[in-house]
Image (cartoon, rainbow, N blue to C red; front, side, top):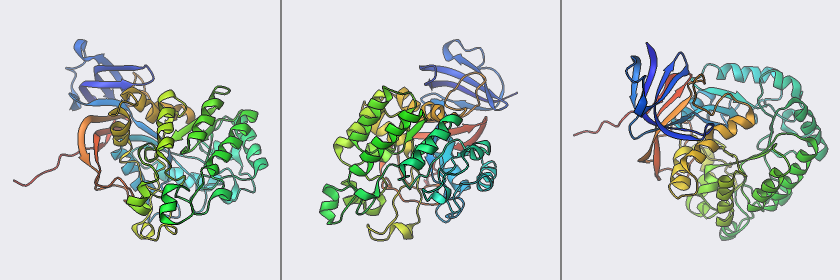
Length: 434
């Protein structure tokens, strides 16, 4: 008997560039058969679970290459288990954790500890290792040893690497090992108060903010270094139109230049800080409508090849501090797909196929993960969702709830998340009193 039979479902598979109604059979953790529903020869096969896919979409399990699970060191905000559950609810089957933990993931021992714990979860959890020891930007980690121990990338995310020579050395080593480097691009020289754009909102609040030059200058420097060394570069959470254009031009010279955009940067502008306060404070900050539209255009033309959440949990007590004192960051795993559908697909900026590509195949390819496709023989990692179901954002599985999207009405509801052939999340219908 097979494990799961999914009948009469719209399958969107960016690897084959297909969008068609099919029946899907899953056995022993892999996809074993896919037939066009109109000609299906597998629909009568007995299975342990049968999913009626009418009106639903099946797609590769989502892949997020930029999450903070705060483990070790800050587990009152999130830990690997709660982060994994939040990811599954959001339709993610593969995530890559950042390494700005305490202790930092700058050695094989800490990396092994984190990956061992992650191995107990129901989704696939990977980790980067740090570029520099202790995130101090002064001395390189043993990059080869971190890769051998399982690191899928390198990053000091949260802290920019300011020393150009140190970064160039890291790029050279990483290029030789074919491991991607992802960078937080903000030069503190141009920042008075981080998390808020230096512009309309900061002026209204009478506080200094983060000038766009903070990002632009670092992106320009790091693209230049990447082109010189041949490293696979990931520009994280891009926020300015100038940085998008710099990536666009660099991609004409190298296939190793990549960029990620967050749902909050393609959804909100700096004015959100005036409405949501610290819940709309993040690094880099929300910027102007012109920047937001440049990010959307970058997602449309492939300049930005990944959507990543930068899922950054903080406690309520931390976010209740004054704007200039509260930490930057919002959670994002449970709302990302719906924000993409509501603000990109429903508004005609991206097709559903391109959205799924940016959220699965694109990031999987950059980080070399066995994910992002639904085909015979592939791991049975899938998200099944209703693209038209409206829901109200509430009741997070994440340990934290620092999101400006609480009580927003969004379209696109995850119904099932399947990882390695197992249902790891199922949307249970509400039971209403008569």
